[in-house]
Image (cartoon, rainbow, N blue to C red; front, side, top):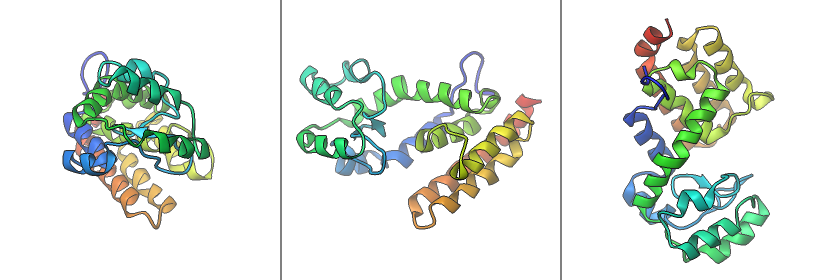
Length: 210
């Protein structure tokens, strides 16, 4: 089980999620330490996939870790997405978010919010093992919590599977999402990794779910 009280992803799951988002420390410092814009509906993104366009507590999250003037500049672009984020990015290229700060904010601030969001999106997720829960947290972190629409068929399938006590069906549903990104090896590899992580936790998940 993920533990009494608040459920927690396993350390292995958290490390995997960070790796899928930014790679290891060397990769992060080479390509992700400065603000970026990932594209599509994203806002300016810093740290471990921290999207300033959607996060609600920029000053509280980063205040203990970055200079006050930097936090103020980042907060000023909060809520901007798409073209507005692209326009804002040009004025932020001098900012560097250290690896230790990025990991600290992710673990202490971002991860708990997404564990709660995952549990709300998939009732029953809180009774999964740390590996299986972590796989779903990664999925929600990457795709968001929406369950409706033609691109969300597998997300709804996961909801139904957990509601009906069919946790063993979840890995194949995660893999099924690869249909959405036939030309993105990174996203397809991530879905495969999440499915394997969920499977690794299945024996314990099945025991805990009864």
